[in-house]
Image (cartoon, rainbow, N blue to C red; front, side, top):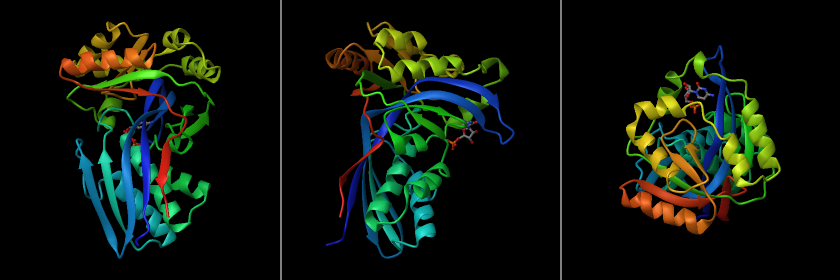
Length: 295
Ligand code: C5P
């Protein structure tokens, strides 16, 4: 029988995000507090003879070509380690695309981890290097849980928060391409990162929701919401739904709200769905991926 690996690749939200400066390499220096959540894609990896056969499934369309981050992850791993000679990769997409939920990055990391399990090759440091080559917000999925991320997002300090928070995540019809969101930002949007340090401290202490809510801020919110009406509408809807707080994840367009408990999160989810938006209720998790099946 062909060996097979199956993994869950979790999404993330950003409790908050500050932009510090623009770097000479064109990226931005950021400070952000992230948390992985129970919403996940499913990936199946099977070795084959030569080539990469990508089979996307599910509601959200992703390319079957070398533009797909999983394709790049597989190519990178196979070029470095010479094994396997080919890969069939089936991805069931549940995490919306262009949402700031890190779905592509998580899938890319899960592909690397899956290949390491299939072949028995790749140290943690080697996988980290390959992951960082795929994008700015990949490394956090190797750690999972709550983390303070700095640099271009690739320097990850886990916060060791064991508490589960109940959240609602919603997305307007439009997605926001990350480069577009960054191109809207200027010096007037920069700050010193101290709010994120305080937010990280709060999560390290597994603080009460009220404390965390007070510290949530995202440098992208104002400009992205003024450009994408749906994001603004969802933010207002979630803020008035008796939640503890609501904010934007990453550079958008997803909006999330913190609920007092899971039941409340489900009630809000149903209301937002009734208004015609994609919406789900989740809880935070302490990992970025989960290997469900391996040889
Ligand atoms: O690294 P990633 O491919 O996710 O980044 C996509 C684009 O977002 C970059 O090409 C850059 O324009 C912008 N970006 C940035 N600063 C970051 C992360 C991303 O300017 N820290």
